[in-house]
Amino acid sequence: MKGQVSAEMLILLAVVIAIVALAASALMNTAYDSRDAVESRTNDVLASTNDVANCNHCADASDCSYGEQCSSGCCR
Image (cartoon, rainbow, N blue to C red; front, side, top):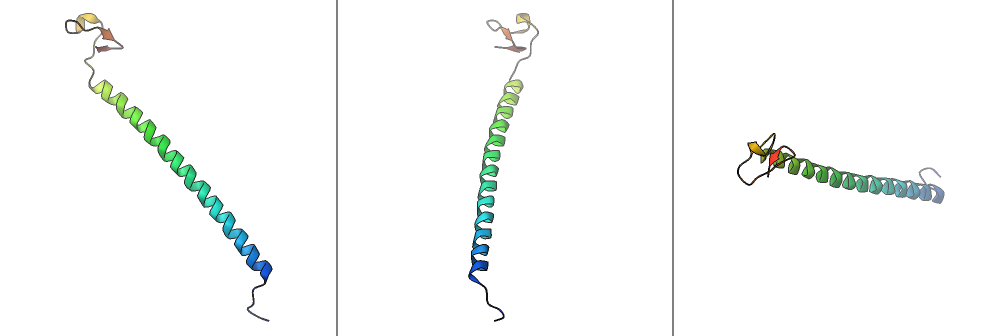
């Protein structure tokens, strides 16, 4: 009979849909992990940039205010 779908075809379709769903789930998990890694690295870079922006640059302790030391190029 024309137009009928066999049980084997329905099972095959269900298996294909399940595989696609598993692949989509794996891709979404990878995307979430990547998002978290990028966010963490961005926060690290912004914190580092903030430290540099708030730095009173110095070559040695004579460039710093009284009581401060020159550490890593910044008066602290």
